[in-house]
Image 1 (tube, rainbow, N blue to C red):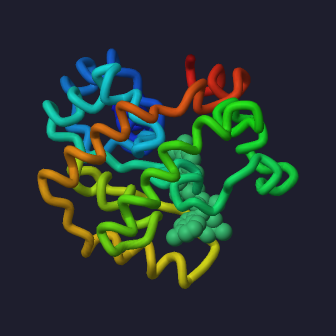
Image 2: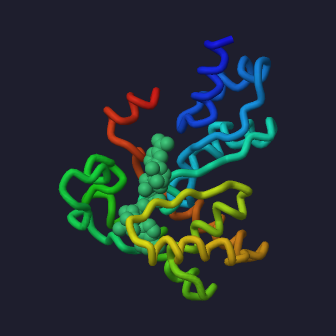
Length: 188
Ligand SMILES: NC(=O)c1ccc[n+]([C@@H]2O[C@H](COP(=O)([O-])OP(=O)(O)OC[C@H]3O[C@@H](n4cnc5c(N)ncnc54)[C@H](OP(=O)(O)O)[C@@H]3O)[C@@H](O)[C@H]2O)c1
């Protein structure tokens, strides 16, 4: 019994659940929640089947880095804004070389947030919630925590969701979401 418990516990909290693990685990226990990176900045799990499988199995999706590691708030406009030692300095899509291009989605989110009357950070969080997922944004500031909490009151109608979806497709950031060593550590 012990190995199964360990296995299932890992799956409940794992951030990089492998799709093929779902079936054997299903035979021993229900997986209640899956933590994955998911935001308008990173939507690959929509394409690789992970999100569809979670929905099919009734697994709640908890999304880390729902603000694209802060980039979607508009706070970071160049790579040298990241403090020394910050993980974003190791991530190709935040590199100075690509950031200019990759900021297109950020600028567009700022425009849509203005139109909607919410903050640029609240809009991606509201989008994640509208995907029936639970965002867990990180912040060191109580004020920003309150701001982020307020995303729960931002209702997006069908037209607004369509507009955001079009933007996500059109302004997809280029390159990997982690550097090679970190990707290898999560099994890629
Ligand atoms: N399971 C995993 O593998 C995994 C991986 C990564 C993260 N996580 C967890 O997921 C949580 C969130 O992910 P994350 O921290 O990577 O990324 P995130 O929530 O997408 O972004 C956090 C960044 O956004 C900034 N921020 C937050 N709210 C803001 C606002 N309203 N306006 C402006 N800036 C704002 C924060 O800066 P300030 O602190 O200065 O506000 C921080 O730099 C964390 O608690 C982390 O523990 C889990």
